[in-house]
Image (cartoon, rainbow, N blue to C red; front, side, top):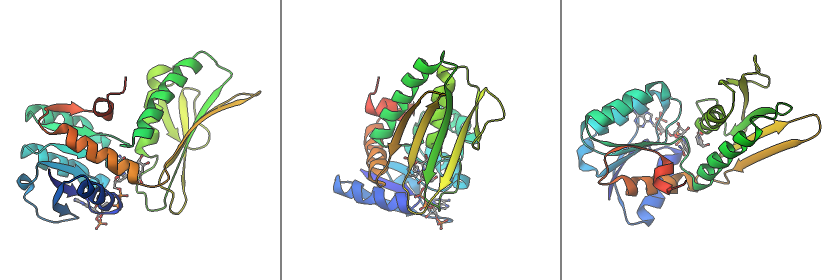
Length: 234
Ligand SMILES: NC(=O)C1=CN([C@@H]2O[C@H](COP(=O)(O)OP(=O)(O)OC[C@H]3O[C@@H](n4cnc5c(N)ncnc54)[C@H](OP(=O)(O)O)[C@@H]3O)[C@@H](O)[C@H]2O)C=CC1
Ligand SMILES: O=C(O)C1=N[C@H](C(=O)O)C[C@H](O)C1
């Protein structure tokens, strides 16, 4: 496959190594303000910055190039991206986290939320820890985890901070510590005990491999998909 990397930072460089090791060719390495002809690529992988993700995705969909996006912090425009994908009969996957481990963790989180939904003595909270270069907070992964709880309980919203302003909200603490690739914890605390589930990324290889697998998977498909579709998780 000929791959366009939209964003050639930490993730772009990690994806390049894995893509080449799987026999693919990188034909575009786009950073800020580069002019590119996206049509030379079979598929594009966007790991850029929140302000640029939607333009990168639109450019691909408008030119009939399927696109995988892992950029977080741009989701106010997600519905527009899905609309454009449908209008152009394109292929599009966004995932807040492409690692297999986190996608398993997402399912575990939903199951646990279902089990905890009637146990009012337990108070939920979340924590995410990332490196200090991260632009957005809370992380996209923490938002997906919160959405998984909201779908399965009476919680209505997430809120940044240690304590939420309402019982209906899920508090999320975002910590920034040098060199941490990504750690997410979901905690249910009561007076008598604590239940905690945690995912710790040891490096960025899992995110990058998942993105390349998604790019291989989307070739020849039309529609808006998720990592659940790619990994066939039920
Ligand atoms: N979904 C997932 O599994 C994962 C998602 N992420 C997300 O991916 C994104 C990128 O992360 P990371 O690689 O660590 O960040 P980096 O800052 O290392 O890389 C982002 C790159 O995008 C470049 N860029 C800026 N504007 C554009 C543009 N218009 N088009 C293309 N590239 C542009 C930046 O250039 P410059 O520095 O010159 O501005 C930079 O090189 C973040 O949103 C992060 O949250 C990260 C890991 C996993
Ligand atoms: O910025 C990062 O580094 C990461 N971003 C994603 C997120 O916001 O959840 C995924 C991963 O945790 C690393």
